[in-house]
Length: 343
Image (cartoon, rainbow, N blue to C red):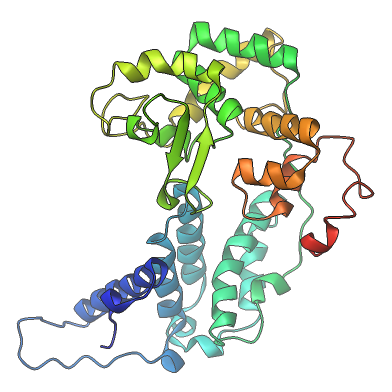
């Protein structure tokens, strides 16, 4: 088959071709292909003949090989398996171009009991359908054609200065690693679970005033360099100077980071006491530290572009979601950026 990853001109294209090669290799093995046989009879599946099952599995393999978060990959993998299991055997082996336009809506109707779950499934299935539209397998995104359900937005309510000080002091005395995570999230505007959890000594410069992440180490998939404020550096420097291995994680102190639920579990355990002591409000989360930082930066600069760059957001629309809890932002103030946002 003419799949040549090493001839790709970009890393993104190389990863796409590697995923395709892996898919075809597994499929050939399933069809009893033996690499030791001199005569190989493996008929390639041309794009026009690809089945529904093959289309979903191929695109899933591509996404799983890309630098997305574990949670996002898990969502896509889950909805792909669920949708294929929902279809009949006949539907799965039919060509993708013959996919029933109403199959997506029938599948999503199973989850209408909880609007949030329904919309999450609709969004994830829409990722696959959008790719099929791009490849001209199907005329429109069938998932987007399914009705939307209104969900209650979860707002990571920001902290006041007094709350921030009291909460961080409490965490520092009771759970130092969780304290460091929250402090870095606020001071360096990094994401707790997908950036801070993976921090190693080598990510810091020599005097620990700067953190550098490659495109594979942050959600935006671009090289990201952030400054370390002095109040954050003071709490980090003692720990970092004791780590000799540059590949050691700053929390686990080994080359392996803590599992993806480590900080979430620590926060969940601490939350009841924090609520009881009045240090936390119900809508405030571990992500509220990052949201608070975004609001603080905007309050001082009144510049959305600066906030976007510091937060590492792909678009300014995402930045606006972070600032939705700030009452002073209104349409009149955003009139200069509205054409950029295309709304």
